[in-house]
Image 1 (cartoon, one colour):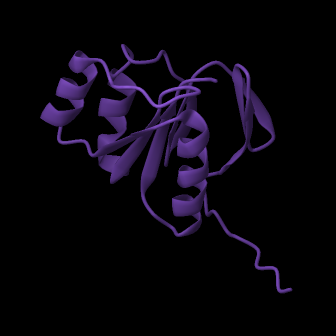
Image 2 (tube, rainbow, N blue to C red):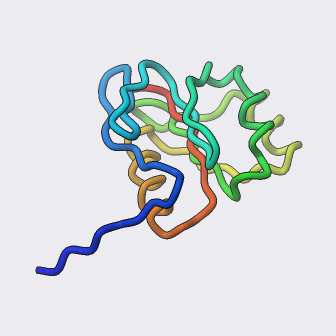
Length: 117
């Protein structure tokens, strides 16, 4: 077996997640989390759109993790993201975390807005 070390450049992967937390760069983040190429910050959830709008030029797509199960976005959030021409993908937070890490390892310009499980 041949192991290949992945270089994530400056944007760190999600190391782990669990009930109420995410771990990034060995640091535990309690609550919802927004990851962009420039930051890893607490996220207020569906009503907290300004940090996503502010970072929209730093990523090509944002993965929105809707918690334990996939769910629809509130209409106001979907309309705001659509109006801002932000491409997004909905999935459960565990799936969004894994997809984020895979695309990050490929050097893609991505972000993730994750609700805790």
